[in-house]
Length: 109
Length: 117
Image 1 (cartoon, each protein chain N blue to C red):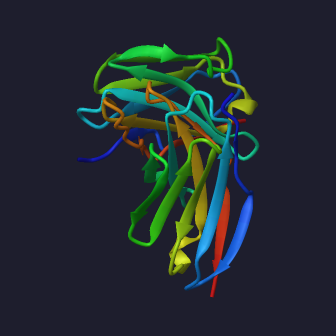
Image 2: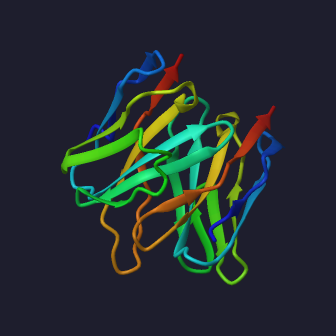
């Protein structure tokens, strides 16, 4: 199966660091994507992990452990504009992705 | 590049009417995906195409839904007849060819917000 689990909501303070976790059943996935979706807008691609380890992109980093079926998105130096839903998605060889329900992050001053 | 273009942005229709949603993928992207998003069910894959060929339509809810991709630059999702439970945001997304273990994220269109009354 390809169930994807992530927390429904998280709250953090501006300037802080927040880690959003995602767990998934390992069968069928060849990689793990993270997307950001602001309210009323389309999801936008943030990161992709196919190998174990940490991928860093500016303030955002994503980690993957394939054996554990676990990933996280790390957001540093939080800004108010980072308030959004963060979607974890498993990808397959055919290019198809299955999305989790998303984690709504609220950044407070 | 103008990105993935969807039309219309908003559609309000009466139950029983036919609805056609349109999508123009990014030029050069060979995969196209139709997703539906609701608060209750999140983002659900309806159908996807590789090189204009439907690969997996197992997510299409029922026979009332149909999708076509007559060429590399255009796809439609049709609902006939529409029902109130079809109300959702429908996203089209496209992606570059994947190969040799390299994957590319989707580029989503702005979506069509469908309301069936």
